[in-house]
Each structure stands twice: as structure tokens, then as C-alpha cells.
Amino acid sequence: MLPATPTILPVPFSQNSSLTAVAPTVQAGNVRFENMTGSSVTIKHDVGNSTFRLIVVKQGSAVDAIPADLTRYSGNTLFGAGNQVTPGNYVVTGGQNSNTLTVTGLTPGLIYHVAVWGFNGINFPVYAIPPASSHYYS
Image (cartoon, rainbow, N blue to C red; front, top):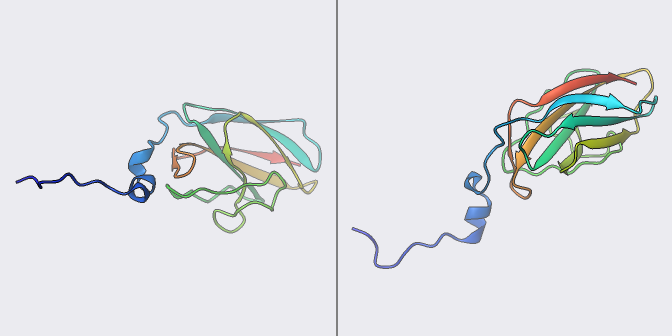
């Protein structure tokens, strides 16, 4: 038997639910590098069919973090200044909707690994897994 009055879910429920966004079906890809100097690099990538991209950089070894759905990460293009998804995995942008980003603050002579996740839902994102990735020698 149906209730006499309809059940209305509060706004926080719908905003905190993965039902508000769907993960992209085509991941970002073709991560590449331009304008390389010892302390900065421009990261380019294909966007897939996501609305936004999360880009994480790690020095010395491959990015080994996986972003949590419904969690928004803040980035900073100065390497080491953004949120860490897990230790050493720094967010350089948490809501990019273009395909180009310049990262600064790199140390010359070191290797940096980059991972790019496409996602939909700016406030409560749902990420496509696995990420597109590559690496760069500064």
C-alpha cells in the first residue's frame, strides 16, 4: 500500500548521492607535455566525454591514488601546494574543464608522473576509472 502523502527527499540527500551524476564513459587520454623547462611544464590531454578533469602529479613514482566518488579535491598549479589524494599525490587541478594546464614548482632533474581522471558533477563528482597517465622528466 502506498503512503497517503509522497515522500520528498531533502536536498542534501540528492546532492550527496551518486545518482546526481554519472561517471564518464570515455576517459580522458593522450596525456602529453609541452613548453618544458626545468621548473615547469604544460600538460595537455584529450578530454573524453567528461565535463571536468582531476589532474594529480607525483614526484618519483607513478600516481597510486584513486579519488573517492562524491569527494571534491582542490588543486594548485604550484606542485606540492594542492590537496593530496593520498601522501605524495598532489592535485594540480580539481575541476578543470579545458585540456591544457601549466604546472610550476618542479625540481629540475626529477621525474614527475601525471594522472588525469575525467569526472561529472562539479560539487559531488563521480570519476571515471582508471585514469589516463604519463610521466615527465624535468
